[in-house]
Length: 101
Image (cartoon, helix red, strand yellow):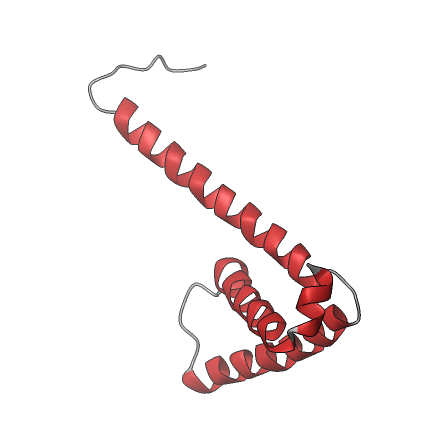
């Protein structure tokens, strides 16, 4: 897989850019929207940084594999949060849970 990704640089770049944008939006996104100029600057820096990471990927470092593991862990966390929320919503109405002291 590493050799294939090294041969297909555009695919590697697009994967790295997509993973970078996803990770930024899930982890580092501020609570409120940024002004448009700052938003453009952030995405421009992600485009440049993704190019640097693509160079490292082509140079045989497992950048895409590491980022995919990070995205997978974020999706697992999100799934667990949704599961806990749904479970708590089901058990809350109609059932008296004993209070812990």
